[in-house]
Image 1 (cartoon, rainbow, N blue to C red):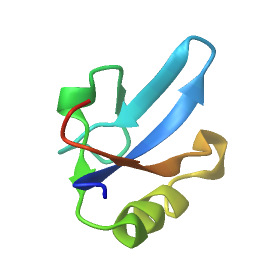
Image 2 (tube, one colour):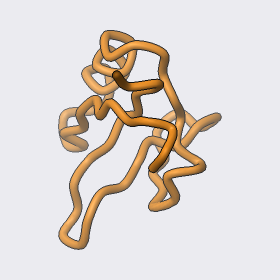
Image 3 (cartoon, rainbow, N blue to C red):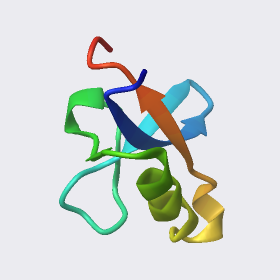
Amino acid sequence: MASSVIVARTKPDGLEYLLRAAPVAWTDAFDSAQHFQTVRDATRAALRLPSRFRAFALPVNGEV
């Protein structure tokens, strides 16, 4: 079971994650990503982003 959920998007060389404490900013650093408690909350945040971002909710363990 996932302990948290992040919002991510693909890029040519991997993933980038929605940065915490910023309206729409992305980071390659998983540790700086904004964590959500449920998939529903993360999906809602991803769907509220402008369509050009095409982000998705990604459940993660605390071990990543």
